[in-house]
Length: 244
Image: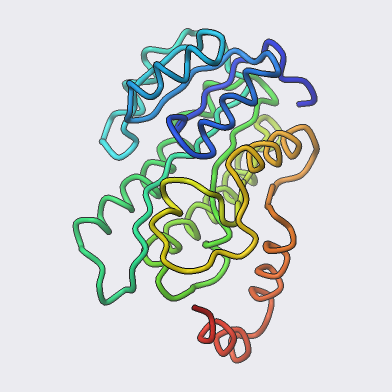
């Protein structure tokens, strides 16, 4: 997709962070937006800045919520469905609150599976289904669980969908590095190559206008993580043990 003017795009997880920045960026290019997230008040405020985008409140962690939201959509095909929705709670495995871990899995994994199950039928032929994984899903790092495990699942899910749905649906995987947001504000360590949400949105738009499955950024960080993932475990585990 080289031009977003007039395109119907549904962003799930649009109330803050990259999702919000994406909404503003797409609106600036003339896209017709549908915005979803749990925070309806934030969506209403954002919609006013996005040319009167439609708002459909949605908690992806609730069973049946996505199907209900879909029932409220207009029947016309969408050009893209983009899901940035995610929960994040940095902690070590031994310190995981089981209730929090369950909610993370419900939103980040089961919710994304529902997007992959229900949303392709909403798209026109050749439309884009865009799932947000993460560089955190490349390798296991201390303090990243269970978030990084859920993102590894999303990365794998997107790969599967790309195989199952091609060529009718253009499946894309977005793997950001560190992006300033209310989620990364929870981190108490130095985040290498961190960028703003607006910078992240620019990377995503450029990537969606080009061919290719994965959009990852900033490359000065993501390429190093990809290299780490390619190493044999005997070496990669030794290196990751030294990281924060």
